[in-house]
Image (cartoon, rainbow, N blue to C red):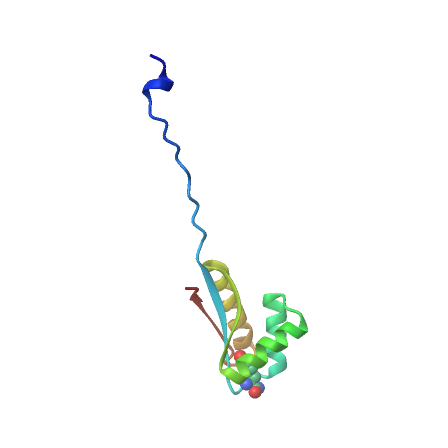
Length: 101
Ligand code: TYC
């Protein structure tokens, strides 16, 4: 008897999970100059002047603003670098990360 008649044909489908994305969040403070926040957003997150201004002013008015989403490692690295940029100038500028639902 040939194999095709005796063997069950089972197709295995390989399922690739998408990596969970993490938000980078900008936190408002009372000390960091607006223009500096815009400069950091442009430099670290490759935003235009317009996009960076909108994100900065949203955090300024509402307390926080989601900057962008990345894989966990990239989000954490960018948040750290951006926070360090403020620290280097003596500003309390803060970026955090959290997993997307
Ligand atoms: N609130 C700051 C000021 O008035 C500007 C600012 C905006 C700081 C957003 C941080 O995430 C921030 N100079």
